[in-house]
Every structure is written in C-alpha cells, then in structure tokens.
Length: 532
Image (cartoon, rainbow, N blue to C red; front, side, top):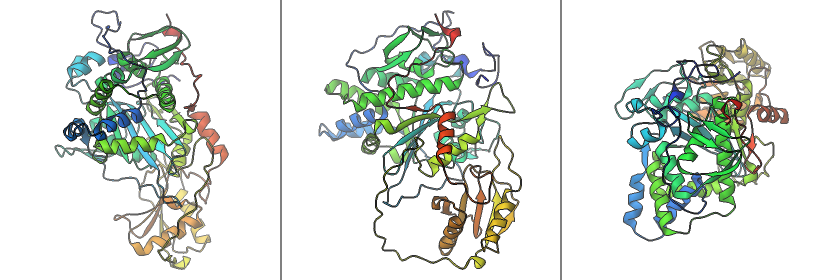
C-alpha cells in the first residue's frame, strides 16, 4: 500500500493529494527546478536543537550585554502548551525521583510571510492556517540513559479533541475524520499537543515549532549536515536534486531534503519520515563528535536565527530554559537514541489517502508511557531515596468500590466487546466484591485508574497492583466518581494487565522502521520514478 496525503486530485502514482501540490518551490515557469540562492560560507556545523539552544545560551550568559540577552528572549515566540479539556497524566517519578521528558517537535507549512511563500511556493495559501506537516515526539527516559523519537505520518486519521483558541476564545469541536496535521489549525500548536496526548496517553512537557524560513536561516547560520542517497534523485515537487552518494546539505537544500516525499522510497509520507530520521541522526553524530562554534560572528548569526525561528510553549520561552533543555538532552548516549515511525496501516475509511495506528503502535506508546526503552536495553536502576512520608494502608478489598469502563475503541477501530465485564469479574474474584461495570462510551490509548479524593489514593494503588498495572496509571482527577478504571487500547485481552516482554519490543522495532543514531551507514533509497 502506498500512503498518500490529503484529499483532492489523483497523485502521480496513486492516491489523492492536494497538500503536496505545494510541496516544492514556486514553479510557474514549468521547470520545477529550485531557484539558486546565495548561501553564507562557514565551517560544517550541526543543525540540531541541542546545538542551537546551547549556542544561544552561550551568548546570553557570556556577559556581553544583558540587553542583548533580553533581545534574544523577545525573539522567541510563545504559545499555550495544551488547548484541550482533558490532559494526559503527568509522568510519575521513578524510585530515584527522576521523571521522563516528552517534547513534541513540529514543522509548520505556513505561507504567511513572503520568505515562506518563496521557499514553500503556493502563494495562494498565504491566508490559509498552517498545517503541522512534521510531527515528532522526543521521549527522554527518566534517568536520561536513552531517547526514543516517534514520527507520526501527517496523513494519520485521528481524533482531534475539542480545543479552545486562547487568542479569540473560538471553540473547535472534536472531530474523528481529520488527519493529524490539521490539528494545528484548531487554535495552534496547543491543539496538536492535545491530539498527541489523546492518541498516545503520554503527557507532553514542551513543544517546539519551526517554519520553512526558520529551517533555512538556521541551516545557513550553522553549516551543513551529511546525507546519502543510493541513486541520483530529482524530486520536482520539493526541488531536491542530488547525485548518488554522500552530500553535505544546508540552507534551502536542507529544507528540500526534509520535505521530499515523492523522490524517496515508495513516494509516501512514510519515506519522508525516514529521511528526516537520517538527517536528525547525522546532526546528533556531529554534535557528539565535538563540533562547536567558535567564531563570534557565526555564533551571533546562529543565536538570531534560532530564536527568531522558534515558537515554543510558555514554559520553555527563555534562552536559559532552552539552554537547560539542551544540557539535559546532551546526556543521552548516541547509541541509545532510536528513531521510529508510528506503526501504521491503511485507513479502512480512505485506504488510498490516510493511515491509522496499528496494535504495534499501541505497544510502542505503552512502552513510552511506562518509560521502557524500545531498544530492549535495561538501564541500571538507581537506589531509591528514603521516604519520610508514612505509608497509608488500603482498605479491605471488599470495601473498595471500583467502576470499570471499556475504552479500547478509537476513531479508527471499534471497542473490544466485553472488556469491562471480563476485568470486573476478575476484580470480584480477587476480593473486590463491589466492582461493577459502566457502559458509558470511552476512548483511551492507555489504561488509567482515577480517584477523586486523597483518601482513595491507597485504594486505587491497591487495585492497580492486584491487576498487575504499573502504578503510573493511577492519577487524581476532580471529575472522577470514586475509583474508576478505564481499560485502554493497550489492554485488549486478558483479565490481568499484560507485562511488557521482549517480544513486544521486537514487534515495535520490526514495525516502526527503527534507526539507531549511531548508524552512519544508512543511505536513503530513491524512488525509481524519480531517478535521473
């Protein structure tokens, strides 16, 4: 199956795609050839979030001028983190008091500025609300020993939850028919965050968004990134034209690489995500190899380019906070960074244009929610600190009332019949004689146990332990009515919650096109229709 994108006219090799009619530079002359641009000269540098924020912070703290530091802070655009009504539970600390970090990286196709119109074409889309055509979740483990990057194809059909625009108060109702890239049009990046939390059950700590001009300006400021193609490629949509072999790309050519779809693999958005992973891995390797900026002029240019290019959540909106984030990310070893693409299948409602998550995707999200490495390498646990809080004992099992709901359904798949009844009966067999089912429709990626009153926390944790659920699924909720167990899409069979196994990890890796950041031998496969 060749995944395509959007709705509209037939694509050259099947499917429907109006959005990619605007994938390349403006080509009214009919050639489709990219326009030559003069690029700044400089040493090879790593275009990587960590490099950017670290370099920016050096300027801000080097004592040059506090006013300039404030100027850089003012460059950074800020927006609300989450525009949805329901938010995923925050990650629980491990035994050593450490918590995972989840950052959503977004690439916007905005044509609002003249520079973006020049780079992205489609001047007629200047007034259109932008789409989030690149979406990647960075999950950094609590102990910072490993990182997993998950790309979701932009044509994935999902539930976009109800979102409220913070600027004008406009309410966008929930929809189950749209693709994930349209979520940005529902009030801003905060709705894309809400969509991801609804899809994965993973709490998002921060987001960072960049547009076409931002990619080019930062690439020009910091140098190039090494990439490889296994044949001559010319994608007239994106403008990318390369000969077979290794290349160092920067500026507009870097943007072309990141946007190329038709020219790679089968011409679908899946191939584009693989190319983006190769690009990011190359940046990581350059950074880890010790590449750094020493020229003050280049550093100033990078600082200006980076801060002007970014839109971040309000909790990440200063140079100092970006610097601290960069230092946190640098702690992860290169060989423990794994790039993945959400396992997907054809959308039953529109198989030639959209994709939907598969059961393997649910397992991937479960691994991340539980902060388990997808590479299967266990981290050495740290000894927990001594607790000064006295333990609260749970009530006798037959005095704990539990309501069980079936939330295994989603926008693309029906709920698994009988799940609430199966688990409720198991609870009764375990001694929770007051367990009962509630047929109210629910839809959750991950299983949760909620409680309303602090007095019920110990009882909720006891229920989780009895069902073999990780304690991280237990959360306090003001909307909860007593103790409520919602069975998510991560638990579709069995009366006890399934423990993660090596077979789960293998299934995820086999279906997620996993690529390790230390692999420098990867070469992008060219679509035979786009060879020259």
